[in-house]
Image 1 (cartoon, rainbow, N blue to C red):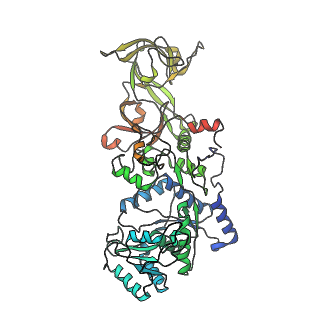
Image 2 (tube, rainbow, N blue to C red):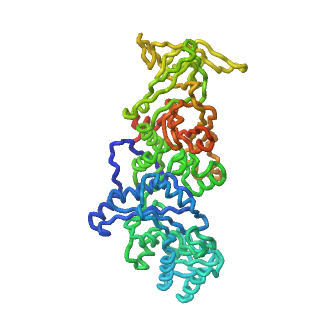
Image 3 (spheres, helix red, strand yellow):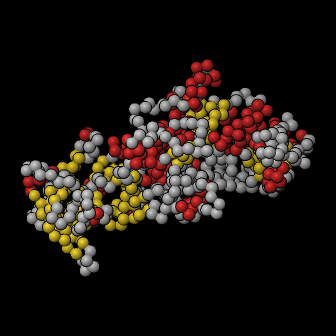
Length: 574
């Protein structure tokens, strides 16, 4: 059963936090197992884009190799040409690089080993441990039995070795249609582990492969290719997610039966489950192909491409993966922890700017009409070395419409008729009058300023309770701002509920486009992908759409509100 994870947000822990996998590897190294070598691998299927769940595996496999002075191989499990594409290969490599990991010259594909894998399958047949079966997929399922009932042997199970060798070669030569026959291991149809009830090792697919073309029309199943690819590459520790625990006996059976010269150790760990998110590749494909999102790099998706486009720093993802740790039990991680890691990282490094999303004009009536002053603004209060910048200030300004109330409620301390507030890096102003349009809507505020309060000075010691951000109308640059929120409205959208489709929980407000925002002119120098904070509004980045649209387009990465940090302060998380 899943449980809500409690993860520390302490930044004092070492990067190499201990866990049961690292303990196993440390003991192996101490005993000199595998000659003291540590070789891991990250083996994605090139049939989709990577997501935050894959990031956990990437950080674990590459991280463990680094910590023990070993090597991590980048290997694609490209054994199903029907769903694979070169686009996915390139996207996956880009994601792993972006996370900060390098495989050097250790880039491999399962398709590199197709000839060897075929030879191993022939060897199993020669040893009487594999046979060609003509049962259909549905018949194989029926013959397999259940968890409480043993399976039944296929009527083709006891063919001679010679006949199986001939039939398997016929399969390779394309003499059978897809689904007409398969190669199965001959293990134990009464095994309590269903994975050992004569599993399929090879199936027919008359589909060109993205690397081998039409050379092959039979392709190995994952379990067969996985074990032998690990062996061929000399992997010492094959780290898999928990759903492969029941497959480990088959992994071992393949290597033991073939008496391979090297036998990697498979170790399983719990996969990442994230609240308000779906991480099923099938469901992500459905969302993309169904047009529910704008593609694999939609910033609302948990894909690494989407998170990169949203402005999430790779350092924050690595820190998140470190904090959630590695365990043997499935859990659901609160997405607020991921958001906390993002804020914590951006707070340290992101430059500050001012922008207004929903503009309301302020006219300072006693400010000289032709005067423009340059106000000194701090680039990052967390990093003194970031220095300062100059922001133009003039008679007409944009402020947020939400920062004004004509009839303010209790505890509303921002601008209202007759009230004085501070303008960030500027002056104290007081609202004197309100201008409305024909519909009675407030469209302009008439204010006065105190020249003695530049930069926040108050010589007479008077205090105000609010500071507002602003942008000079004459100098502001237009922007489209995309405000992203969680893609789903419930914590567990994929919970099994009869007759309920997970897509019914899609958040209709997961994207709000603000078409007419205004930014301070310094933002005109920021390039696509760069991250920053809009003061009081959140963390943002420049979207790649900025260049083709010829307009500044911003994505909100995360808001300033940090629920996880508040929970930690209240002692509700460890």
